[in-house]
Image (cartoon, rainbow, N blue to C red):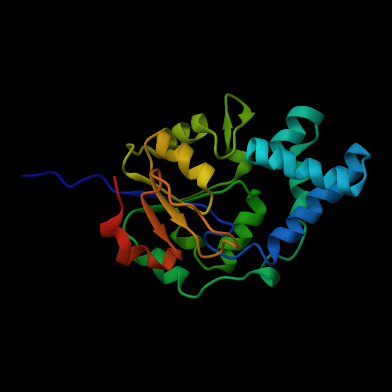
Length: 225
């Protein structure tokens, strides 16, 4: 008798994947980061905003640059960046809880956002009871150092942590750099484009391209290995 394949593990990004963060929550987060940098580093607001953007582009997370180059307290930074009413700013499609209930396989969250913010968002989306784990930036460490997405060592570590074979792990994301790194270490990849305000190139490391995560159940047969 042929053994059934091991179950899939779905790793979902949060902002601009499960909800539209661009118009509401992300501006608040960016403002909080910039104000923190102004206070902590004693620079002007334009300089702080430029530094925030620079570290985000270089490392995938502003936090990593601030910790690495300025020795800031990561917990103070994350608190300052996410100190607002998450539910009041949430912009999301209906039906995500039903999707998560019906989608076969284990579902986990893998986000560069802070833990408290991530948990508040998934509760507001009513998908928290369908998640096997929430991996936020505080938990993304390799050998004691922060390694947020798109860190390949962290993504490999996540496969071991979830005890999932490459090819059975699927990263669902809006970020091409994160998907490229995941594909390089063996993940299958799904790009969500619906919340993007820009044209997104078609690339070989994306196994499936969707406008919304709600399209996943109907599109599974098109997901490339």
